[in-house]
Length: 282
Figure (cartoon, rainbow, N blue to C red):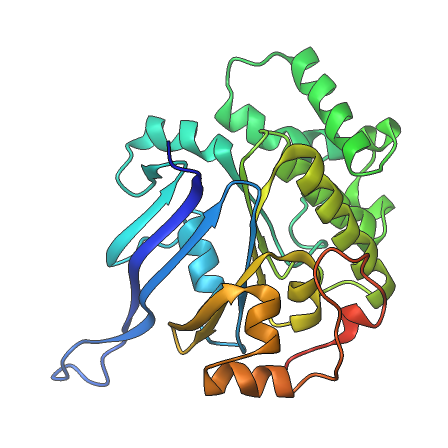
């Protein structure tokens, strides 16, 4: 049996551009050029590159939100774009997302309990209210928030606490894969470290796999096993994180590494403030 949680095979994503005039031909902007990446069970893969390189487009494609023009995206062995509606609903229990903005990703009108339980309400329709409440309590405990948080509203929490709520929501369906798109970039530096440490602890506890999108090499080096460098929609280099960052082969990777102070720490050390401040140029 394959140990691969995620397989991205030759994925191409294009956007149609508006015509310059009525007589102009239609044209397309290609954002992803035959991308290939894989993630094994329990492994973290970082996707790094500057703004506009295609990182977030890849994340949305993996989440089922951006259908590629060609290629396949397999999660737990299933091509998610070949599934019918009921098949996709079942498959989506196996992959969830954490987004960048802890303020905009939580509906301010809803209680934390309702926000966290949204995925099981839509994907596990047979669960009753008690089962949902019990699972909300479990994931709140897992992310370090008290059970009483369930009855509160997002505005009653700090940015770091809100991101913990977002992580709890991602955990509620017991997924194998979590897509984390710049999950700490909107947080204060000291809070970034706390959230990253939590994500590493949760990975070890639940055997999670992460697709971790970031432009911050320090964060990626701290939390990922492997890294893929994306430049103008192409994966130009990938491999074990420390190996790629210590001995970059592609000139673009070298430019990214040279842009950050040295040294920056290896994987699986507790994230310090200095680790979380290493930014790539936008």
